Image (tube, rainbow, N blue to C red; front, side, top):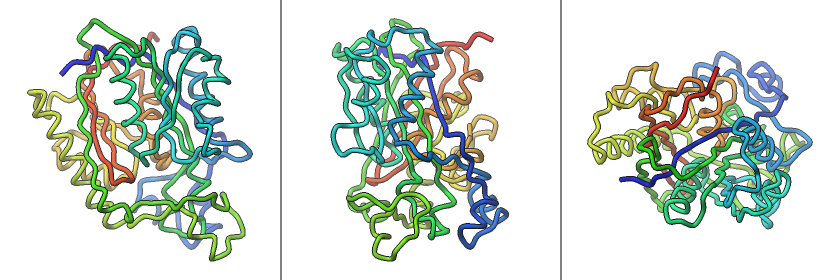
Length: 330
């Protein structure tokens, strides 16, 4: 397949406040050793005193600075998030206004941790069909606002962050090549958050408030995520007449190190081809893939075969295959 659309820039932002495993030992019955062994996470970032859209604004500003493009040249912004501070207007409206993208149409979409990949596909389709020339795709989540810090199974996993990519038309072969996304709506109760505003991070939680926090069945999600992400990677590789050895980089949703190691082993990929940042950031939900692109941008060479693979609420899981289009000058 061919969309004639490329990623031509990336941006990211994580809050300055660090919540380490040692910090969590003072909040909930857990230990640094247990968290690290079970999840691979050493610390995560927490956004205090600001809303989710702030992280999207900072990520987009970092991309605008690195690419040097005129904000008014952006036609479309799509924001994947589950934690917008307003039901409407969407967080994307705040981002385009603050970043000077006054000519861009925008909307939010919600697909759990898969939100960025869904938004990337929609933006790719928009440019490929002639509906836009330039699009900014944002993934951001303030997970600290929906996580129960009295629940040691969940609170150790998540952090806050935002990332974005710039999409543009291209006539070259280094482009976004293909997508494959699957959904199973029969398992919505395994990974969900009820509607309504939760108490926020580190409150004096009353039992009745806990229904408004994020909930997930960790053991079942582990099995489904491992199988689902490996399966869609094999499908897209086969469909594009590749073998797994031709993949230069696998960038998975940063859910849990054991999940990522299982996916890597299932695909028989060398460990050095799989990129991780969850040791420093934890699971940042829709932000995790664009944050990885931002963190590791200097590793990529034009023509590198990259798989972006994710798993999230819905249940929804999917993958994008792309050939990287640029090299960062040193």
